[in-house]
Length: 296
Image (cartoon, rainbow, N blue to C red):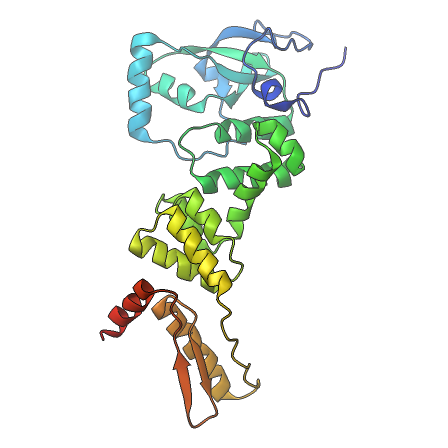
């Protein structure tokens, strides 16, 4: 009989740990048939090459190992059978590694059937379900599910139990400048603050709001207000200098350096002999910030 495919049946089908939920019909070639729970030697299990999570906190692993010594494995790991007495981990690598630290020689495991694409999909989805994932890690996992597992956003939403707008909001984070993504990854700003910042399309303005958010410890509401003010402000667009002269290139470079220094878009205009530097500010607090930089 043909094997039922897990793809296309949602998160519960992909990560179901109960043999009652899914009986996979395959040829039994070992004492650990698919669709069953078995005690499997650790030496017979290899790690999942599709595991998106590369770092495991050493202290957390030791704590889990200590718990396993006392209570044993409460939740079995999940594996797929490659050959007789040879298995590959699908999910539960922390439990697998901690069991080794605890000195166990075997662990309880659900045995399932899965091809390489299903392995990748299940590993990514299990990774997404971790409670301590930051928004960028979630967004990157969503992107991998779309690009490597060929899922549409609607299908992805079904897999992870999220609506399409939630998936879209996470994916949009990957369009933010690298500095902002790193801050979001390191919990220096929140998902709400990042969502407000991304409402602005201009990267320079995004960085300006980001720097103010961090420097002034702005709340999500304050960031949203700042974004609205910026969007309502019709900043003058300086005329572009004619290309081809060294002086014009120097002006552009000077604008870039000043904008980075002041955390806002600085306009420099010149006719070759005289000109002006224009530094906009959006509030009294912003003006004071600029004055502090100028030491005025």
